[in-house]
Length: 343
Image (cartoon, rainbow, N blue to C red):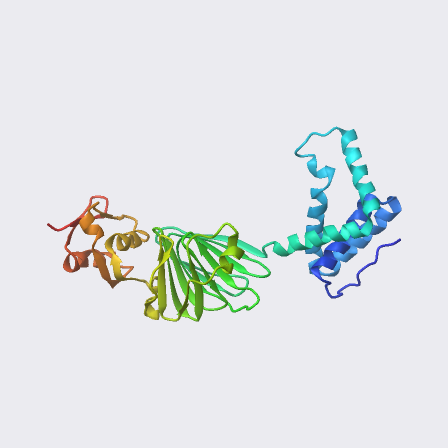
């Protein structure tokens, strides 16, 4: 029986119906007699060109078909020709015995597989001294601080960002059907649409909100993945002008923060608020070619710094240190600076 053709420009059916139709035509191309196969081949070409979604469904159906085909094994196992023919014959017989119902069951599984595939994936990275901005296909904006690595995956039902290291300011486009999730080794953040920053450095995560509200969980992602993380009770909810730090799997207190100071590096400033000196030095070193070198001294590790410093003038920071902390600085031959305790 000739395959039913979809009229040009017809509205796309549901993803499952598209996969079922593609699988049926592929089965006829490979499993029927010459006349049936040729008719199905023409119908499949016409159907694929009728709507952009059909081509995507065909790709998913073809992947599922090839995964169960002896042809797909040629590159992996040197099967004898007779064995390959028996596998092909067995598949055709199974299709004829199981019929369309079995195909529909397989199509349902493929539909679920197809639904879970990412619509867009990208890995972003900034080297030392570079800040980068980008816009995602959903309209969300990202600004990456220097020395940052983040991976983005946009799905049909959610959006994910995996921050491996560094700091990112997220301007999330509102989409109630697709929450935006940020994952780090020290905690997770969930939001529908807002502006906030997430920093993952030195065994800690810091979240600061400029606009809107975000939910925060402390600790690494559980074994059940994103779904299991979101099923846990929320540790805290942050609003605009609030920040929180997670460290050693524990959530710190919610603290007020000036929204103008959030992601101040985008405006060319590094802002420190009671920041341990080693952390402040490490932040500067994400921008400097010749690094600052802090002596390995417990007295230095206990010092804390508050102030705002222009990124274009690191000398201002270095020159101000002896005036605000009990330290001395020494210019090195390679252009770097040594910071030592003042005795």
